[in-house]
Amino acid sequence: MAEAPIHEPKVNPPGILKRKIEEDSRLDDEENGQTNKLSKKQTSHRLCPYLDTINRQVLDFDFEKLCSVSLSRINVYACLVCGKYFQGRGINTHAYTHSVSESHHVYLNLLTLKFYCLPDNYEIIDSSLDDIKYVLNPTFDSEHIRCLDTSDKMSRAIDGALYMPGIVGLNNIKANDYCNVILQALSHVTPLRDYFLQEVNYASVKRPPGDSMFLLVQRFGELMRKLWNPRNFKVHVSPHEMLQAVVLWSKKKFQITKQGDPIEFLSWFLNAMHMALNGTKKSDSSIIYKSFLGSMRIYTRKIPATELDDRQKAAMLLTSEYQDVVTESPFLYLTCDLPPPPLFKDETVENIIPQVNLYNLLTKFNAVTEKEYKTVKEDFMKRFEIIQLPTYLILYIKRFTKNTFFIEKNPTIVNFPVKNIDFGDILTPEVKAKHKQTMYNLVANIVHDGEPGKGTYRVHLLHKGTGKWYEMQDLHVTDILPQMITLTEAYIQIYEMKKD
Image 1 (cartoon, helix red, strand yellow):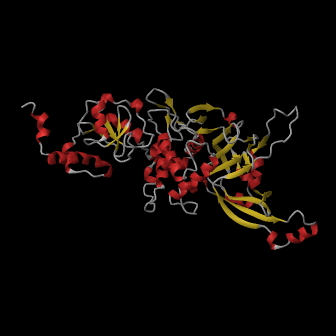
Image 2 (image 1 turned 30 degrees about the vertical axis):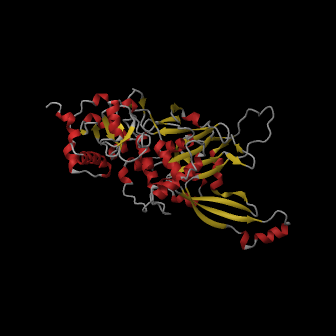
Image 3 (image 1 turned 45 degrees about the horizontal axis):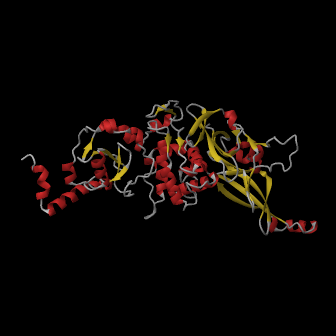
């Protein structure tokens, strides 16, 4: 009688055995919310004797949620013993086969966040697993978010290493440091961070049928929550899923394996996120525009051809074609032009690096300074007048110039204060009177090191809770004195308007 259960499947008619396998496989429909009576009968909630086999050191939820065997994204489970992903839970599925062959018994459904023991196929209910669930899907309440900019509390990873939430290294998969610095900088823009830390803020955004661009928003939100997670298992995060979405939606314009330009990525990313959030031309239509959108007037006038004599030029300047044309234009960042470096160096100035004050660069936007722009047929003079300063002002310091043969880098050092920068000095009195606040503090500074077209990028970030500055280059995180930041070859800067 004791051997009867062993031989029982062999005496079952083929139809019954087939139905049993089909019914077991239906358990794998949980990610679609499809539960059935059979699953409720077969699955019992109980404690598991295999919980001590879980190895938190190998768990990494930063990578794409796909089966390591079939590469399917449907119904994927993480083995909590070895960290690999497998599909399914029923008989003949990859997770079931792995559990039998390797004696790895504890699994987590990556979508429903439920734990199961295989091959016995029962759900595990145990509060000791909540930390794993939190690492996979960190959540923040409003009270926690309010304290982020005032807390100086360190967190401890599984290996005992201390880290500061928000100051977490990002993996450089191959050549994605140009993306990492932008993602790190944006994670310290307070309204943007607070918006994405709570998924409910953008969960109701509806996209047209067949459009999956909203995936970019979801991935950025996931990355933001992982960067600020106070209960991470490791002191670094991989932006793999975020960058996969970037490669897909930029149509491979931005790659993980090829160095790119951070300002091009920033410009594309902000506009793509604005569109994915159903943003319009209105300044308050998305969190992107609310944070970064400013406005300026552009005065453009044509220049008479140089070969004409003075009388002809004077006559042409009186015609309407050569008068100022005024247009209003929104902006997400301002482009600052560096003065050209000296062409010739003698023995005394050979080792001197040219320097310029930030305020000198900003005179471009004071509505008085003119700049010449040349086209193939015509030349123009332009003046820029800022009429609305954004809450967060992004400055792009143009270091690279391209010509027919090569890319040249301007090494000029920009001298800038880290605190209390008054951008009201470049506004006209009428515009300045409309602004309650024109003082800004630096919150992020992106630097390029090395040769043009190559080199590396790093970012300096201000952690408001501690008041300290940190330098981050991929996985390397160190604190830095603010005086040292001003000595670097600044490339992109983000300034925050001071509160009244």
